[in-house]
Image (tube, rainbow, N blue to C red; front, side):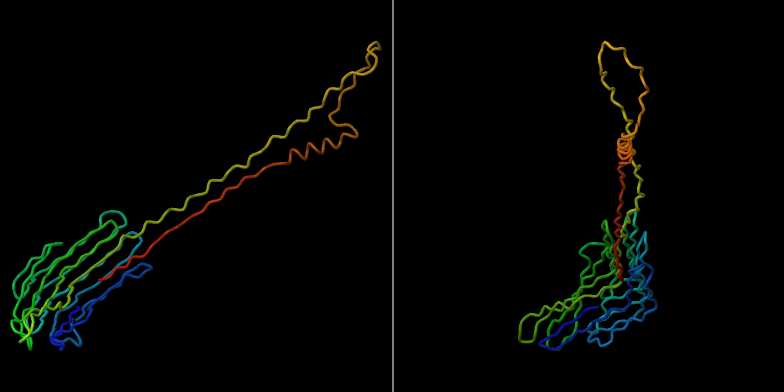
Amino acid sequence: MDLSAAVLGTPVITADAVIGTATAPAGGGTDSDTALAITIPGALGVTATGTVVQVSATRGDTASSANAEIADLALSVLGTSVIDADVITAAVACPQVGAQTADTTFVGLELFGEPVDLLPNTPGVTASAAVTVPGVTDASLNVTLTNVETTTADGATAIAVQAALRLTGTIVGGPLLDIPVGSVILAEARCERPLQTTPTPTPTPTATPTQPTPSPTQPTAAPTGDPTQPAPTASPTLPVTGGSAANLWWFFGTGLALVVAGTTARLIVRRSRASIDS
């Protein structure tokens, strides 16, 4: 409730109050309040009675939700009955997968004593009633009631009854009067779709490549000596002899020159906050 109006510098309407609120914990869980008497401490020209039956907000990994319920409401401004209702509710649900939902209900809703039926997301219903304001002739309180049920890809909002008030009339011996008085919201709920988390990928090991060890090949020595002389008896060629041990170590060194490849993996995890209030 946020109402304020003054005529010729003199306040005639003052009401500023939030009766019943719940916000889901950031880390998940439920916040709620129940059985709250509707009162407006310090109000001027405004009275209200009734009960906030419940306000609740829940945040989870796969869904969030909120709801509000008011019973036996009676709101009067400048001594005139403005809004009466037996029951007013608002509820929203925001699953991680699937459609977001917003729903409102009202039983016995009346504006200036006349029954009204509000359709969601329309201009609503407007009515007025004569009121008494010192220093003002033909004073009238004008009220428009609207109902909101909206959903998006990321969340939902439900406002059962939203009242916008204006005070009009003529100042005695002066100009016309048209004062925006403020608004009253009866049963509101909001929620946001929980963020989806990205699963952690499992690293795939990369095999270490193995290089084949080359086989040493000994060159064939060209024949020497006098071709007219008989060829000497052939001796077997050894792979390693005396002073050629250095070649053997060189081959061993070449065979041990291996390259090893590794892999890396990185994970980014994103998770966000929803705030639900009612």
